Image 1 (cartoon, rainbow, N blue to C red):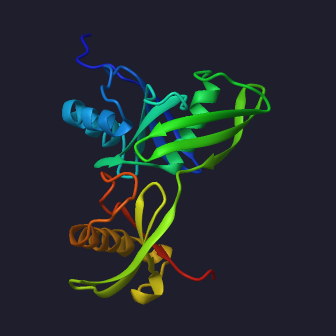
Image 2 (cartoon, rainbow, N blue to C red; image 1 turned 45 degrees about the horizontal axis):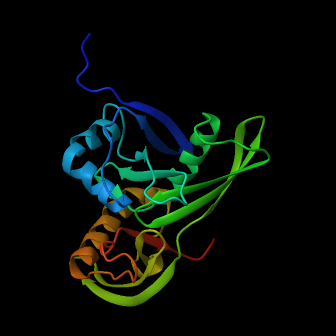
Length: 232
């Protein structure tokens, strides 16, 4: 049997969120920064995104990571974060999964009781501290990139109305919206309505504004919407 492409992957989950980690099979990703490496992958291997993330090998909620060489001496490994239709500059779920995979496979120098790993990402350096027992990862703590509140803005979203959003950064750009202001209860029965609603609001805001990161000017697009409400 002949193969046109052979990729080595580790499938993981973080509290149920699936991450497919690419550990081999890709040529060297060129670039002096992780943003350049991600751009190189986009320009030369973007067709593999669907192969890795979508049916029949993946599904709509799949996350992915590509492990590569770091671009700075302080980091142990570089990582590019994937989702089904594109790329993330950061991803907590996938960072936990990558940490466990690196320890459990011995791809980093494993120390007990704790192994510390520094990731080089598009959004900056991300550090994890992995509790290890008998060579196996047991729990993971993460220190992400500096986070900050940007501003509160109002948007007149077609067919939805006025939406007030707190725009903030935490590795990704988020719009935090009070679910009570939408008039739709955040229940499992309504989950089919929340997802398209969230994407509609996210796309409208992303098309309306350019967010502004003080250190990474390339991170200028709103990534996600998060709805919140009071605990019941």
